[in-house]
Image (tube, rainbow, N blue to C red; front, side, top):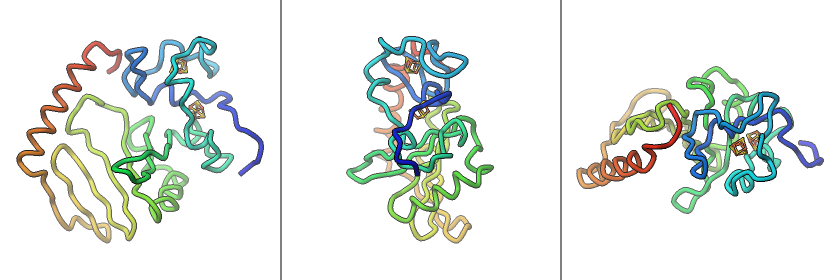
Length: 186
Ligand code: SF4
Ligand code: SF4
């Protein structure tokens, strides 16, 4: 890792992958202000959320060559339930499975924190699947209210949210869909 402060350079992957409420833009769709050569067309007046955002690579948490546009995914360490998680957001579905480097990074981090792998396709689909890699080789494949737990690479257990939590989840998703209904996206 270099000591010099990093700059985004030609990368603007977070401007595609992340949701920007101020611009009513869903995750997974290019921002209207993205420039073809990289960077932001309204840099001096960009929304506060853009100003505040710094991905894990920009903050020095990954190797020099791991800039998100090269990896095909945006990585962040986020707090979830009071614990740190590594979030890997693929720019295209399936990138993780074809990238040795992303798999190496996930293997390094999963020793100390859960690693969540998701993509931005069908972000309004409540049952869009994602994966969580845990220490000790356990993987959780989550789709809707069902989780398949894999151990030693094999499906080992199927978990379903309790009835009340299923109902609350559906309500929460319906509210979220309504809140995002006029956002620009897929
Ligand atoms: S993903 Fe990271 S490096 Fe790329 S533009 Fe966003 S903050 Fe910069
Ligand atoms: S306003 Fe600029 S920094 Fe914010 S998402 Fe759009 S292009 Fe990126």
